[in-house]
Each structure stands twice: as C-alpha cells, then as structure tokens.
Length: 302
Image (cartoon, rainbow, N blue to C red):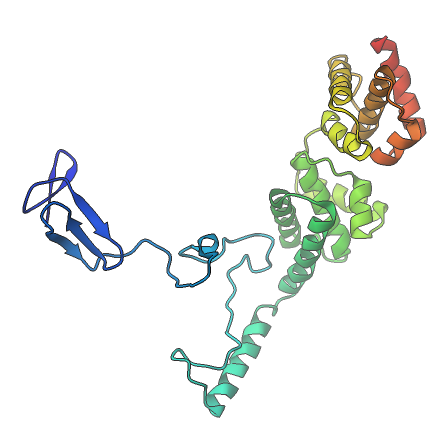
C-alpha cells in the first residue's frame, strides 16, 4: 500500500520516499525497509525473448508501423508456414490440410479486388524507383498517398500503371522540393516522357495539387557533386542566383538551366576548367540553354 504526500510516492510502513520497481519479479519494493508495496505489476518492456547480441535493435512491444507504401498498409495477416502447434508438436494430417486451405484463402482474400492487385503492382514498382533514384522515405510515402487518391477517384482506369506511378512520384518530388527532374524519373521508370507529363497534368487538375516553384539553388549541389566543384564556387553560384531572383529574372525559366548557368559563371570567375558540355551533361539541359541564360546573367554580374 502506498500513501501520497505532496505528490510523492512513499512507503506505507516506514514513510520513506524509496519505492523502486523490480521488473524481473514484477514487484514494487521499499529500499529502506524491504516492504513489498505491490506485486504482479504489468511490465512495460518488450514482449519478446531473444538471445541475440543485437536485441536492442528490435526491442519493440508492437509490430512495424503502418505505411502507405504497402498495399495493405502493413496490417495483413500471415499464417506461419511451419506445420506445428503452439507447443511445438507437429500437426496431424487432417489439420495440415485445414491449415493449407486457410493459407490459400488468406492469400486470395488479400488480392480479391482489382484495386488491391493494382496497388500490389504499383507499390512494388515504387520500391524499385526509390532505390534507383535514391529518394527519401517521406517522399515515397507522399507518392503512395497521391497514387492512392488517384486510384480511389478512378483516374488509373484505362491508363498505364507505370506512367501514373511515375507522375505521382514526380508530383511528390515537386511537393517536397526534392531535385529530381522529369528526365530522371523517365529514365528510372522506363516510360515515355510524354506519357508521364500527360498523367502529371491529369493529377494536377483532378486532385487539385498545389505545387511549389522549384528553387534553382537546390539544384546547384546536385550538379556540382557530379563535377566535384569546390565549395567556394558553389557559394558564388548561389549568390548569383539569389541576385537573379531579386531582379525576377528566374521566373518562368528552367531551374536546372539557371543553376547550370550560375555554376558556369562562377567557374569562369574562379578559373575552374569546366566546359558548357560538362555542365549540360550533369544538369540534363542543352548547351544552347546555358548560352541563352548566360547572356542575361552575365550583363548584371559584370
């Protein structure tokens, strides 16, 4: 029994504030007099036993978190493939047949509807695109959310799953301001750019997506990392872009082309041997784009 005094838990017998919990036996014990205050208390530790040295990595009371990147959001049932009961004894032949039928029906029930099969295929492809484009899990969750909304609204019917998924991923990258161009997603998804653009416009119109304007400053780090450009040159390019934004010269122009041009001007100033061809290949734009942007930026940077 415990008495509360001034918000402190004290022992009923000696009145000392020395109550400790023994999780091994499930008791609350007073350190001063040894009085057992409570027994058979509920443990708040992990509900598992292991003898592995890496036990701290999986010490959770529950399973994995729900995720939109799984077709069932991580809430599916799994019947163990081991034909043994809870005591470890092998099942009888009749019970084995019953369990096999349960496994079959459980597998069929998870993909009974066409939407479930569609999500299985699409989200499996989304995992492949995540590895190829090196995209963060947050962006992948957003892409899965956009694809689910399009599926619930009936926008997938009659259209390519790969194209709609690639368009959803591109929209998620735009929303999270992740520097991935439409060309990058086209190569990774192996889908025509025209099809992805058409699906993206459909998603933007039907789902009323609000896409932020891509900041060309975020593209500088990506281009410079491919060419191994120094930090001083990158900072100079960022200053050039910031001054161009103040003059409203970046409105309506390709952010990747602006970033490549700013790096080109910065490389000329710092006497770094980088050609327009190198910057064009690293940024995914043409040399003509760099030359056209160079004319406008050079006049104000003199």
